[in-house]
Length: 264
Image (cartoon, rainbow, N blue to C red; front, side, top):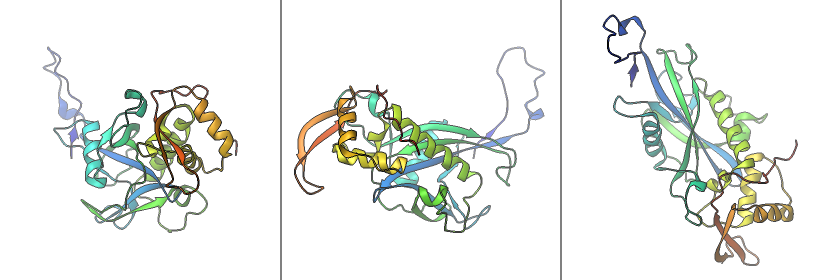
C-alpha cells in the first residue's frame, strides 16, 4: 500500500505542514479483455477477504512506495495473468508484431466512499490480449474466471452478484474505450495473434461490438485502409476450407477512413 500526502520541496516553504492534509491510498485496477469462443470476456477475481468478501472484482492492488503507476499496473498484470505489457501495435516498425498485452491508462476514480477501508484513489488500466488461457487465482483472490461482457453489462446479468467497489463502472468504461478505439485505431489487432486472417480480425470486431458484419464488405475495408494490415506472405487452413492469407499489424496508429460501428 502506498500512502500519499500532498508535499512540496520548494525552497522557503518551512511553514508548510504536510500533516495538515489527510493521507490516502492509491491502487490500480485492471480491465483485462480478451476474445474467447467469439465473445468479448473480462477477467474477474473472487475476493477472499473483506471488504466485499465473496464478490467478483477486477484484478488489481495497491501501488507500492517504490513504483510508479504504470509499473504497478504491469506488476499486477504479471501477477494475475502472467502477461507482460507492450506498446501500441502501431508504435512498432511495420511488420513487427507486438509482444505481450496492450496496456493503457483508462481513468481515475476517487469518490470518498468508494472503499470502506479508507480513502482510496484508483487508477484504472485497460488491458487487451488475444485468446488468453484460463486464469489462476492469486494474492487475496479465492478464484478467477473469464466472464462474458454481455452477462456483466447487458440484460443477461445472471450471477446475482454485483461487482465489488465501483468495478462495474470501471468495467463499463473499459469496454466502451475498447469499442470506440477499434473504430479509429489499429487496436483490434491487439486481440489477434502475431499473424492472423481477415476473418479472425472480423470476428474480433464482431465480438467487441456485439454485431454481425458482412465478410466481403469488411475484407474490402480493412485491406483498403492504408497501413492497417500488412501481408505476412503466408497462408493458413486452421479455420478449415480454402487457405486464407495471413496478415500482421501494419504501422498505422490512426485508421483513415475509420471502421465505424454499425448503428444499433
